[in-house]
Length: 438
Image (cartoon, rainbow, N blue to C red):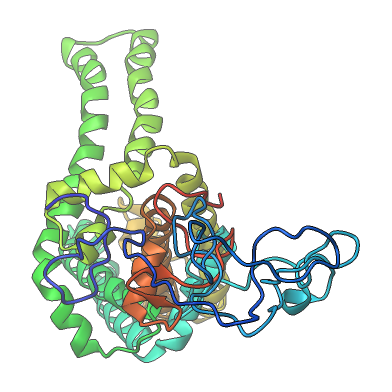
């Protein structure tokens, strides 16, 4: 599998191989007698000019930064159109572009096409977050139903384990409470990530889907997704393990001085930014694997190439989205924490328990926290997954003109085999090598 730009709709074995920009040459219809031409005028009151035979075909502008076929609509025009006028108004302004009053009166190009939850152009943080929330709102049956099922199983397992720890405070119950649910949560998290990625990919194209459809699309890639997740965690853990070698060596050597221990601990502190850098660099591996049908190592390489040069932007979006969604989760969970404290006024840490707070909590508090945790996860899991996928789509739009492929996949009437037939500009679809909005 190569890094050829293309959009792999859910269920297709390979992404399309066609180029991002237009390749076909528009037809050259003969101009109608008396039709206005777009050539230069000789004066303010000059009539329509006849284009020479060796000039650009009527109805098409000269090639610009977006290539041929991105100018005026093909075919002869019945008359001067707003925003496409051939004559200049008094004062040197083109009709439809020089005076205020919207697109018809002229302030820039029309909005970008939006077949689904996002406009098909480079996105800002607010648009990514809005697209994530819109995905959950429009496809709430699939998105919230999936996240609710995963969250309910996770919280039930956690509540049972902590109840056991509460009933047996001096046994190994607290340790089981912490670690027993990790394997199950790992598997459930993979399933939720894979299926929600497919839901978002459908939402970008403006298509609805069902849980059965996304399961059929995601199932072939779930094992590879587990490999990507495991390998990413292994890379991050390996950074800290290498950084901890001096500290381990000092501790094994005997009874070192506190200053020596402090110096040996410095590499671990230095490993924190390295691990953070790697985690952001590999952040888009999961959507690359699921949507492009990539392999494990290829998906990791794909993420690195998409994030390279935009690390700080990706980091900022990830950080802000985590903060916003974390605040929302805290607001949802807080009433259930208060209810749990009223249901269980006793100290849940059991002072006589050597494990302290890991010993669990009374049943009333456990039940309240489990309900609150389920609701929080039901809302936050699909939103975070959608942010991840939309950030991946945004990076590919900026680097590979994925917006054109998405518009074709969505079947927009403005697009044909030659690409975007509407006006080009900062709000229109990008093209390979053309100017892109940052």
